[in-house]
Image 1 (spheres, rainbow, N blue to C red):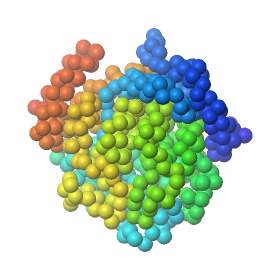
Image 2 (cartoon, one colour):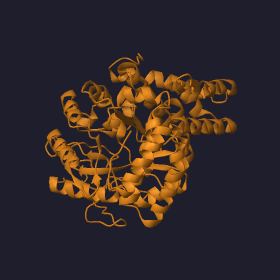
Image 3 (spheres, one colour):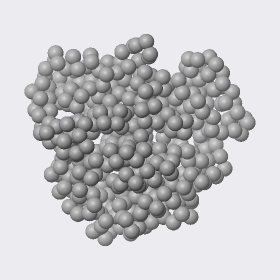
Length: 483
C-alpha cells in the first residue's frame, strides 16, 4: 500500500501507485483542460513574502511528461524557464568529481567498477595522492568537490573516506581552497552518516539507479547494493544522522524513464513529508559507454528531446531543488537544458582515480574511468562558454558555511529571498576565479559581466558592500567574502 510517510521503501516507492500514475498520465496526455490546470497551479505566484511556487505531485507531473500536444509541451518548457529564472536566476554553480578508489565488491551490470571486471586496474589514492589531486583541482579554480568511491568495506571503509575529507579541507595552495565537499558513496548506517556530518560534508548524494524493484535486483545481482530496501531507505538514515542536505538521482537508460520519473518525485515527496525538507539536489545522469560496459545492451535509452522534457518537468514539480547535469552530457545537450532547470554543472571533470594531478587540461587517463566524458573542455573553457551564453558561473559555498542548509535553505528559497545572498556571492566567487585562474579572454568577458550584473543587486547597501569586496579581491589580495 502506498504511504508517503512510511519508512519502508516499498510503501513510499510503491509499484502499484506508480503503475496507476502512468495509466492516469496515458489517459490524460491529450487532456488540454487538465494540462492547463496543472500548469496554472505550478506558476510562480507573488505573495507578501516574495515569489512562491506550489510545485506538483508525481501524478500531475507525470501527466505533463506524457503530454503529446506540441503547443502544450512548449508551454511546459516556457514555465520551466520562468521557474528557473525566479529561483536561480542566471547562476550556474560549478563543481568537479574526485574519484578516490575504484575498488568495489558489487556486481552492478552497468558499472565498470563491478568486481568481475578484469579489464581495469584497481587503484586507491593515498593521502599524498589525494593532496596532489586537490592541488590540481584548486589550480583549475574549483572550490566544490563531489568525492566518489566504490563500495568496499576493506579498501574503502568509512575511516578512509573521513581521512580523505579531512585531507581535502586541510589543503590551502596559493589562493586555492576546497570550501565544500559533497559525498557520493554507498548506502551506509546512521552511525556512519553521523560521522560524515561531523566531518563537515555538504550534500550526501546517492543515486537510486532505478526505482523498479525487480529491475534493481536484476541489475545488482550480488554485493551489498543488491538490497533494494537498504539502498532506497538510505536518505532517511542520512537525515537521521544529521545530514539535512541530500541529493537524489536515477540513471536514465536502465529502466523505463516514465517509471523512474514518477519514483524520483515520490522519493522527493517522501523526504518532504517525513523530514520537512525535500532533496537539496536531483541529478539526471544517462547511461554512458565505459570499460566493459556497452550502453546499447540496454534498451531503455532516451534521446535528447525526452531528456530535456524530463528536466523541464522536474523543475516544475520541485521548483526549489537544485538540478545537476555532469560532463556525461555533450556541450550541445548541456546548452539545451541549462535554461530548463539545471542549476549545477561540472567542468574540467575526470572520472578516473588519480585523473587530475600530472595531466594537462587536454590530457586525460582512460584506464580507470567510470564512464566516458562527453564534454571534455577545461574549466576555463566551460566558464567562458557559460558567460557567453548569459549565465553567471558561481563557485559559491556560502549557504553551507553560513548554516543555510536543509529546511533553513528551503525556507529562504521558497520565498525567493535566497537570491539576496546568491547573486552577489556568485559574482564575488567568479571574480576570485577570474583574478586567480582565468585566461585573459575569459577574464575580460567575466569582468564585463560582473560590471553589468552588480547593478542588479537590488539592496543599495548590499550592492555597495559587494562592490567594495570585489575591489578587495581584485586589488587587495583578499578572498572568501560572503553574504
